[in-house]
Image (cartoon, rainbow, N blue to C red; front, side, top):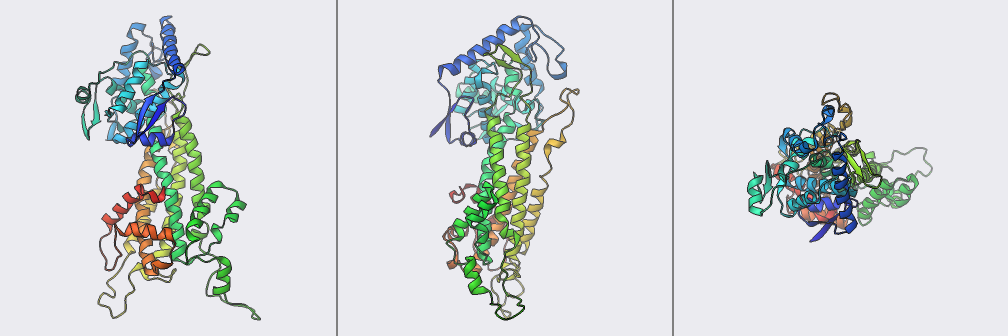
Amino acid sequence: MNSVVITGDDLTIEDVCAVADGKANVMLSDNAEFWRKIEASRKFLEDYIATGVPTYGVTTDFGDSCHNQISVDKAGELQRVICTYHGIGLGKKFSREVGRAVILARLNGNVKGGHSAIRPILAKKMLELLQKDVIPVIPELGSVGASGDLTPLSYLAAVIMGKRSVYYKGKIVDTAVAFKAEHIEPLLIEAKEGLAIMNGTSVMTAVACLCWKKAERLANISDFLTAVTSEITRGKDTPFVKKVSEIKNHRGQMASAAYVYNIIKDSKRVWRYEDFLKNEIENLGEKKFIAQQNKIQDRYSIRCAPQITGVYRDTLDFSRNLITEELNSANDNPLVDIDEGRLYNTGNFYGGHICAACDYMRTALANIADLSDKQAEVIIDGKFNGLTENLIPFTAPNHERAGLRLGFKAAQITISALRGEAATFCFPVSLTSAPTEALNQDKVSMGTISARKWAEQIEIVFLQFATHLLAAMQAVDLAGLDDFAPFTKKVHSEVRKLSAFVEDDRELDKEAEAVCEWLKATPLFN
């Protein structure tokens, strides 16, 4: 099993996903300078507050109450107070996997450069939770994402102290029960450490990391659906030729076109454009007009697909950068700078970049969901592809089931319904900011809500693509599998293990859900 080494500087989305899924071990850096900075920043903080200077959230109350100063001897208790009163997260709970990602992201941010001024023992305690797989149960609702994820991260702080509940060995149990079983000693958080844990963007960032990896897979699935739609409809190769996208310039379009072309180049059903002209177009000769039987251009849902999924791929790249930068940031408040000997009261806890990444991704994802809906119409409606209406088996008028087969009629409605659902997630969540906390938090990011909405939308689109794929494989069988591309045949073989050809109508709900889970896991779309 691979190991992820925490330094505060170079964690990747892939690292987060591997740790979340339990596919990688975690350790803290053994670099001497790494630990020197953590220890030096802690000493700086302790010396600083000992002077009696009011220090936000350490020797003062929080937010709009920061005019209330306390003595240094109350600093530890104050941190335990903030953890306690933020125990008002509501709604359903984040999964164990998200919880693991949250701890990893928080640990990485808290050790970066020593800026969070936590004690080394606190960093090691977070690591211990990951290593022994004792994971906070965190409610999804309660963060506006701009004093960070205060309320959801209070559940991590509470667990460190042995309170609230955890995921442990497949169950939700009291933290004290899991700690006793794993011989974990609770750790009281001390001066500044409640803020260090809670006053940051690690919940939204963790959710965004896990979303991003799933969303990356949807790009390849979308491009495959374009390829197979081109095959089913006897399309042309022109839109996917390398030179076309090079002329346009966008890297996402180039990647999308190349993915499709690498499939259809080995298909006997997609025309090389010059061969299409030679074989399917009547020569005008001396005539003044011909109504050609075949159109020389495909529909936009095929011909413009690289320009649509290309936007999605470019948005993936853009959002990856924002998420990765946030993941490797010091994002609590206040922050310590031991090089300059300064303490900064600032707003790095503001989740605007994560909110933006997730807002952009939801719009791009809704567009490829819409593309899927249009491609499904082209293959299910028999008027456009030379196959049967609703992809029913070829049925003679005198067949006993004639008129009793409706095939994929309802599946198309479901695809359109899911497309509509996906579109409802497009409103930019950042614009729902409203003042709260006595007007101190008067402009907030809403980043955690944005990330959660992206996670919900991704699940819907996977279901839509699975339903679309069932229809596509039915069309492949009707058209004749032999002439399709080798990759299409591989996909067909795997799907047919989960769902047989629809001869007479049957319920397809469980089969679509099984194909959905397969799409999430199959290496074919890595």
